[in-house]
Image: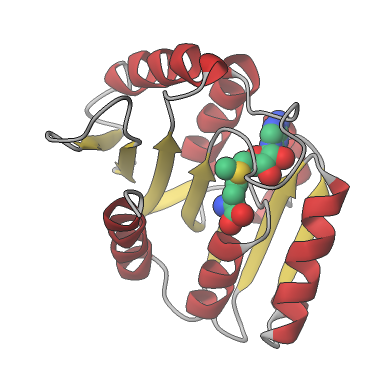
Length: 191
Ligand SMILES: C[S@@+](CC[C@H](N)C(=O)[O-])C[C@H]1O[C@@H](n2cnc3c(N)ncnc32)[C@H](O)[C@@H]1O
């Protein structure tokens, strides 16, 4: 599966930033695979908040987290990630160790529910604000579907404009794939 090396990269970056007891946010829960990873890394004393706008997806994620025995440390919100700034408790601000985005639509979910540039950019601003120094934000982007092209361009422009003093911003991309392979943007907060 083409996406595996990218996901591995996401997990390595997150694993380094998020230690037991840490706070984390999954901005696009879907069926919960990133949420589960964050919850495992955060450990029993850590906390994770997850956002999605598809109730059916959140139900699947909820079951998966319960099965893994980590549901108590996760709060799932049926809220757009664009509202992240206000939805996250005030005492989380500046203390979040990892924020993950996996944009686009949910395979096997409602194909009409897809992330959109405007709300994504609002959520990225919020995520960067919420991060602790040395915290990490990862953004998986898929330009292979129509909406994804515009969203990918918008996110790359946004990422290029993040001030150097604020975060290190990296782009991971394949050099030898056909069509429009996924790309990964990763930010490490500086201050
Ligand atoms: C590629 S999927 C995420 C897959 C997920 N990481 C998993 O493990 O299944 C993208 C998700 O973003 C959700 N989404 C779309 N617009 C959103 C929004 N404004 N706020 C939060 N989630 C949104 C979709 O419902 C979908 O579940």
